[in-house]
Length: 78
Image (cartoon, rainbow, N blue to C red):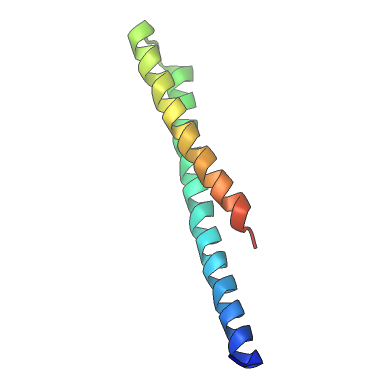
């Protein structure tokens, strides 16, 4: 492999990483929106213990998804 091929391969990898970063940033934004919806539901809704538990589990699931995306994003930021 010559220098030009090596440089082109490197550029291709960087472009792929930047595209993945854009996709992960979009996923992160979606998770933030889901979290905000749940927080609004908590703020505006009256619920019993069972309903509160379900909301808490939903928030926990979204927070875990958000954390996974955030961790992957931190690994590849351009």
